Image (cartoon, rainbow, N blue to C red; front, side):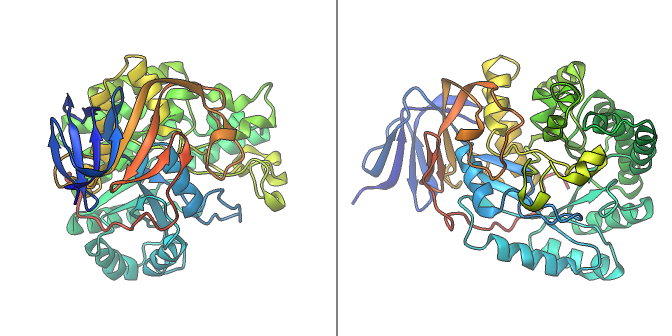
Length: 471
């Protein structure tokens, strides 16, 4: 009998803190030995010339999520996790969204029904709290946190999702008491509404003006307000999808005062700018790039890179929110309503499959960040932040054998025709990438190989989580 189910030989192992050459022995889906030489395995993989990293943990994705206007998301759990696997991920954390007027517990049960048996890689749910009734705050939310849903998101904008300041404070207090981490979408709703109205009065309704309405000033103000609420209630928070230097300054201001404020950014803030929303000539193609907060400018990109290097950012996520451009029954971004004003364009872009290649290529391959920092941002820190470490996000004895092999020299463009997501476009079309994941291994099983998905729905499992290391 072979000693191991799988041996990965001869690769350069890269973790968040180390880089070394060794073999990895896997048994029962776990890493059981790391040694200079491992023999006697049922399956052997020659990783010579490749980087061996923990599987990516994408901590911010939207799958099968309902929308207020009936627009259908382009990815369900099957297509979304397939795309994630092809992009080097072994765990994703989508959101179970509470629709107003509905039980939070019932919404979680609905999401489990959508995910059950359909996931190619492992998943765990964040919650979205949109209707913090006394029942939700007093019973449902505390009980769900104790059941392993140890993080939840709140919104400071969007008519159907936003919480007012009093509601935010109430939710923050529950989070502190139950040791949950609050993720905050920080944009000032009233400021956005005001500028939107002014732009529409001037006839400025093209997708480009979404980037003007969702200004960095509104993001900065909301970030400061969220931090103030966190300070008042002594609650750790995560500011998600930070787009530029203004909100970054608020986060650093808070940290200098000893507050527990974490920060996340995303590929759109290093690879796109607001000019992409203009299309070729202020045309509707710009709708493909509409997301919130929107991409900013090149100086903002440089600020984001500095934050990725110096630790301002803890996590790099995709914020995958996929819509079709030409959706069925006029439900895509290119719908009649959206053409009347940017405010009706579905918010979000696909990125679950391209997150890791973009950061590796633009960061590691171009010398902006180290491979170790790449691992920290995309796997180890997300696992630590959301109660999955060391089972996920690490290469160590006892951890799940979630491993991705990288060819740091492979060069190819991002092309929609090669991707596995459900959207009909990628905002990163034609971007030249150096460094691609060539094999994704989930608990010892190869689920993606050379761009092809070899895993099947049902390979992935649901993960209950412990509390964040930061609460």
